[in-house]
Image 1 (cartoon, rainbow, N blue to C red):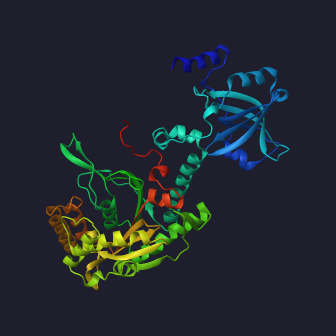
Image 2 (cartoon, rainbow, N blue to C red):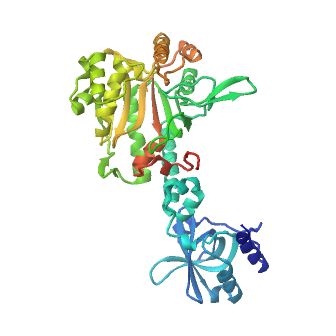
Image 3 (spheres, helix red, strand yellow):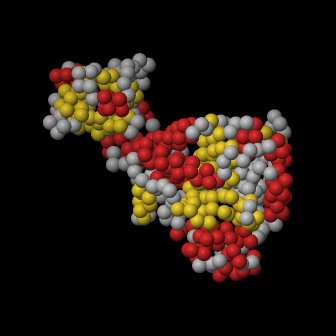
Amino acid sequence: MAHEYDTLKNVEEQGITPYPYEFQVKHQLADVISQKKMKKTYHTAGRVKIVRDFGKLIFADLHSDGKRLQISLTRDNLGEEAHKQFKKTIVAGDIIQVTGTLFYTHKNELTLQVKKFKLLAKSLYDLASKWHGLKDPELRYRQRYRDMILNDNTTKLLLMRSAIVSQMRKTLEKKGFVEVETPILQPLYGGANAEPFKTHYHALKRDFYLRISPELYLKRLTVGGMERVFEIGRNFRNEGIDTSHSPEFSMLEAYQAYADYEDMIKLNEDLFTDILKNVLKKTTFTIKEQKVSFKPPFARITMIDAIKKYAGIDVNTMSEEDLKRVLKKEKIPIRPAFTWGWGVQDVFEHFVEPKLVQPTFVMRHPKETSPLCKPCEDDPRLIERFELFAAGRELSNAYTELNDPRIQEEFFAMQQELKKRGDKEAHEPDTDFVDALKYGLPPTGGIGMGIERLLMLLLENESIRDVMFFPMLKEKK
């Protein structure tokens, strides 16, 4: 540590303040690059990477917000003292302010001819020796700032994440949806099958839960008269950590009155279309060496038909015991709260999910999989629900929302029976939500999309940690 601070002492002995109060940055580096006005004097800033010293001429790369601009510093333009000062004090990693004009080198590279420079923040680590990037994945995630400095692709990927989320907002707002905020600390959790994180609220002297979903609050707003609402926010589920799961993650949920799950299919495709057209500029992606095309319309198939097609099993005519035999043969654990519906779900996950490479809406799920969805009119064992799959991953989940308070009470009671039989992820009954339904929820369609899983696919990444700003990690040993 003493050696690191010696660097600051050396800078200060030259009369230079390593972290000055005054600066003059009028132009973002991205604007300088895009404008390309050759006669304009720019005042910009960024982090110095790679310095190339040719004596009287110095080239360096300036980086900011995922953009790079070459800068040129000559003795004639800077003056001898300033030129010597740059050589003596500025290293890769420092953040500097530069003033100058643009020109093209003989290699036709856009370059800023620096007339003045100023140190804005001294890096205590000379990054020149480490400029080939940070390779250790664990260190990359724990020190994301360092990862971003050393790996340009990390910064570009995270900026792309923000651009995709921004486009989702634009698409929904264009369709008349209003963005809202619902509680993260909830007295009762619901809206998904998951175990919650529990905390204690001292002022109210009661336990609360970090939300597993904003669904029930968003539907309360629809009861209240907000016909198109959405929220993009953090959810928390007390589950394992692996390449596709994180206990803390971002979710889009949207609800539209006077709509059903067929309308949610159209909304789902429109969200993809706008992202591909306006942000990514392509419709085909390579996932695990497989080409996946997101050009709508996407394929549709019922869950029962998908099992018949991909596994050759007709679950429609099978009993609970028949399904158990299939699962035991495949060495799939039998749930403590086993039912026909959960058997169908487990068969689907085992045999079908990995085979759904091209985008496919899987429709009409067993009623056990959600107590918040409207039953199919022609088959009460099933609900009007779809999930979108691609490259073997679930990307979205949508319902025709259940709006009959009598059936809602029955479904909550069924969840309690499942909980008694050992289902830890069963819903708690929410009597206030049932009371809200008694005031009248219009026919409503709802959709949820996990942001990180979507980004993993669209940005062609194998780990959920790569597409998160600060991923959750196990304790460092």
